[in-house]
Amino acid sequence: MEQSPRAGREGDVLAVVSQSGPSVSFFDATSGRHLGSVETLAEPHELCFDPTQRLLWCTMTYHSGFYHANSGRRTELTVIDPDTRRVVEVVDLAPEHAPHGIALDAAHGRLYVTVEGSADRPGGVVVVDTQTRRPVGRIDTGAPGSHWIAIDAAGRTGCVANKEAPFVSVVDLAQETLTAKVEVPGSEGLAVSADGTHAFVASPYSGSFTKDGGTATGIKVVETRTASVVDTLPTDHRVMPVHLTSTGKLLAGEVRTEPDLLTGAHGMAPGRLTVFSADTRKQLGRIEVGLCPLTITSSPDGRIAYVACYASSTVDIIDLETLRPLPRLAGAELGESGAHGLAYIPRPA
Image 1 (cartoon, rainbow, N blue to C red):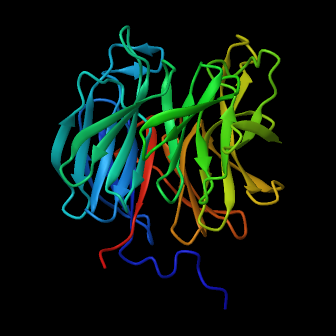
Image 2 (image 1 turned 30 degrees about the vertical axis):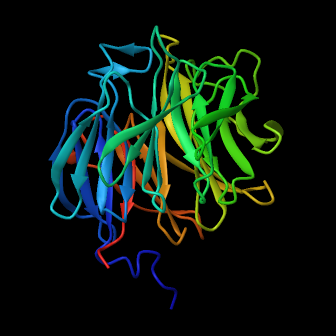
């Protein structure tokens, strides 16, 4: 008998941000049962789980609204105990603002958080000590709208996506310096291979989903050693989130729109999860998901993908071996819109 893809996950938990909540909700990874929620400051965005400290970090990005359309930028990170489901601390990064992308180097106890630029400084990456929960450094990215970050497994190289700047920033994490700028026409989500040799960058910037300005949609494959684009994985629509599983599958969330027949205005259509092999760069398949896929994560064994879809406020759950959907997460705890950050939390050892 074929084993259920959810077998062996008893006690594991999936954390989901409701941006409009504002809250972080916790679901049983086996049954999908809602376990509880934690209220947060306005506009929670992305999540990162630290297994060493066993804490969940959440970026608080704006007071309301979105990138380029907000009422002001926040400065906080919220630290949550996922087992007791309570807020441990709110860490203020001021004068840095609009923390969004977040990546963990657990071995060195460092958390890397993107922040947007201001009149007197460019955007950058704030370095946080995960034990003291305090900022200990900053890496300038040379761009105003630094938004997503991914790092290699060794904690040596990081890549930062800059929404409207025509480059991706490559940074040396040990030296805390900007080492290269890779030419791409604006960028969204990205992922870095475990060995740090390649980055996969969603490009171009998705500020307008209905116009591409002559730039083909897809995922740029960047060789970090030469800081150059060496390949493009084509997609039919613009991609926002990108994620690499532990088994080497590259997951991309395509955002689709369609015109209203009466008004001609474009609205969100069902999105698409497209799966590539990171090694061969060949497409392995694709499956329809909810409206506006915004964040993707996967189970530690790489078997299951989780896709947070903002506009439908759902989390699609996909068996990556069969590319078949499992029961999705939806309901009042995720709000009418706003499913955003995701984190998979294995049960305590």
